[in-house]
Length: 193
Image 1 (cartoon, helix red, strand yellow):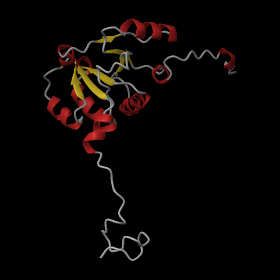
Image 2 (cartoon, one colour; image 1 turned 90 degrees about the horizontal axis):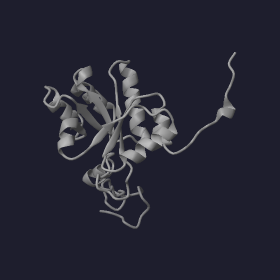
Image 3 (tube, one colour; image 1 turned 30 degrees about the vertical axis):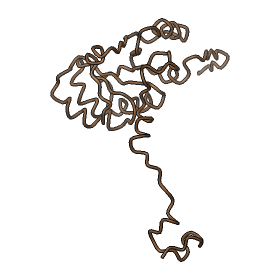
Image 4 (spheres, helix red, strand yellow; image 1 turned 90 degrees about the vertical axis):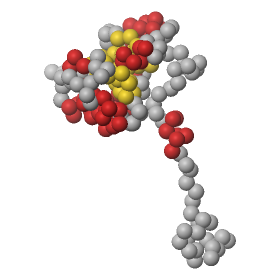
């Protein structure tokens, strides 16, 4: 018997709907919102997406930390080239430490580990050659020398380009988080002696 008028938790049988808070069902509806990808045809966003090309030459722990930081800074995709090894093995590992960012393999459309990586990545895996055939146009550019060069790259690439792929760089996180902020703080130079 349920005592709907009584205080919550006092004299109410376990499982009574009157005292249990309702849980929102968020499975499919919120998964599409939190996928990290915005629709390519959304007219509110005319700036190109940002992809980051990672290199497998460094320490694996640093690679994972960089991937998480890049994802939290708002990049749309992580790219890996087949020239450095099997991109699907590395992308599967990156899928385990990231949640929303798109994972793009370049140069190995039919490698052996692709099926496994697709499963681990939970729908976030893409192949660069297939993206090109689907109409997405990504351009690779060297890391910009300063913010003015970055603004020039973004404005020139805005028309007809899905995204810009930059190499990973220590200055990248600041560029992603503050793309339009000129931060010339030469007055804060500290002499170390």
